[in-house]
Length: 317
Length: 288
Image: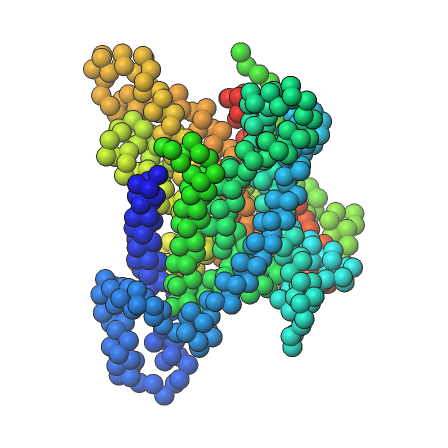
């Protein structure tokens, strides 16, 4: 297990390194050029000034050289300044990361809370009409475009009923906790419905597999009700694959909530990446994309770990 | 013995056939209904449904039904082409990895792991925003909305091949152990011929199921990208692009946001149900 984990760590570091070069190179292929943008903004700059600035920032150097300089600085924790916010990149990333974590943890937990009981019902009545209806529901939520679901929720709760705010994290000018929660409600619901379908299918499969184990028959023979067997014995077993899926989803954090965040104008990591890429904020986009890769890798690692810790058979191997 | 497809899968198949037919016949349907997807008529903006315009008109006075048909053409074409390209790429990689084994297998599978570990949507946004001129592509490839659609197809295929590759590799690995492959080897057939003539045809069922299931996901990706303004560019419009336009008018004309989204939802659902049904038929043990 330790050997396996070490191998995964090395592999992850390698993927991160390759990804950093790839993204660095891609950034150079985006439209525009930082110094040209400055020149366009101030007409008094001469071509000589432009050349001097390019030399100053090292933009005239070849790509591998520029990448190595950037990598050296990044490894010492210096990711440069964000063009859009005129703040250090880390200071721009921190609040967005916090917002995304809030949205994601709320949404995933709600999704799981909704899906587990449904999965239990479906597993107990496999092939029955309840199972079939739930299966169809799972397919429906999997097939829903997240941004459309967000739009529908806005139309219903923010436009027609005017119960909830349509966008942002708080009322302009600051709000209390209740106000922030009201802003969180619709995006959280969107994320929760988005993961409901897959979680329902996973929990049905996991609980169904646990129900077919021989110890379930023993427990039933002892006189436990289905309910007790399910809650005391099967749930524990089913949680192993579910934890794995949860860890993977958490790793996919920014991919998962990107669309939801942009529909609700929620200032999280996904929206930040989108704005940084479209606003030619190279430093910010680069750091944010690498952070996204890092969390994806950490999620995979956490899934492996959870699998090993919860399942004694894997731990022994 | 062939099991019949489940009812849900048959419903999905019928819906898909109807959608494909409607998309293919869009120009004829338009002239039959005497409407146009392109004709801008500012005196007929945001009309409610009527006999002349069955679903009403959009913010530029274009017939909404005609726009939906045209959007469906683009959405279906892009999703099907991207899925086919991704399946082709995945089959090639999976087939080589599974048949050749050894270092090629190790290398290709690490590559697959790497691509799976990528943050998909953020990366697609970067790829969608790239400046093709800086890639050194000829300017002939750049002009027009058709080039943007081609770009989306290639970009999505480049990240969407992993599932097919893994499944085809697994199928090839198990086929390789079977007697008919060994006898083919004993007959002295070359590895290329064995791969293409004996292993590939037998991976086809797996391939078809995986490809069908991937179309839905790919369509969701394309529509998300187009919704964010990075996919299909106007004047060409997919259902996702139409939703992007509807976002600005959410408070004045919410109905514009309902139809394209509903079409995406129905199409993706149909593909998923069909794929699930095919999977059950291929391997009934998949579901308990």
